[in-house]
Length: 386
Image (cartoon, rainbow, N blue to C red; front, side, top):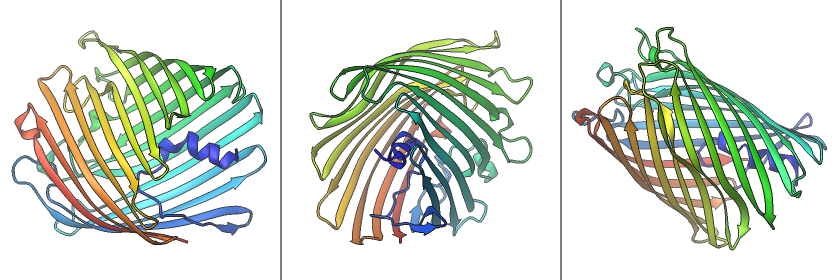
């Protein structure tokens, strides 16, 4: 397998969720492969602040170019990607913003038994919903820096394989007046995964995971550690399915004695079923502790997403999805049930162009009255490549 394919597959989770044009081509640039793409869109959001009362709506123009630079030798592969997403809210200049994303990814194969994947990223982002102070009409503005690496020992076809991983994440807010300052933190994760081949393309796995959350505020009582033990399996193209299953338990321990510790079942599941080459059904579900918000010590999140992707012809495809989340805010009296669903139709008249028409609905039903809302987004977009 080419290293660039390994790189793309192993680090797919770091890629933008925006769709690429049908078959983007590259330009040879001094020995590098340069792949530019462009997404432009017009959408209507009838509640972009996520408010129960006094919902605010706006037309939004989005311009989202991406630039990917790739290089590959016999044993290494590299990708440098930059994109920005400029969103102009026609009814509210304060909501308008430009997000920036810079990513560097690499895979190194020293020999058949030793491989290293690593990545760096910087994201400058603004959000218009779930704000710390929705009455202030200011976006939540933050910078997120990430760095990660996974060292793998063992051949890809061998009986056993070990992964040793680490990941660092830093979050800093740019809001004035100390808004969101209590959310700033540095998080460091270490994990070890043992894979054992059961036969064919199926492997069992055992994972140990440890995360340390260190908050910037000296008086913060949110400093904590998360420890998880997970068992499961990973398989590929078995009876037209592929996926990964992790089941186990997670414990949240706070450094401060004023905070209650929590233990809960944990799972991470991603399964794809492909009954036909042109149709795939995907199921993703996760239960884990997220960091606290709105005064909560931690948030236990349980989210399930079911989607169906289908190619109706060589030119027309669709995606239908449903998502349901339960968010239990610990240490405060709040429980959110969030439902979302949507449909996107894509017309691909040319290899280098896609036209998409989509609709998304979100309903947040919260035990805290002012946190409940409904939101509808209608979108028309055009994706272009070389």
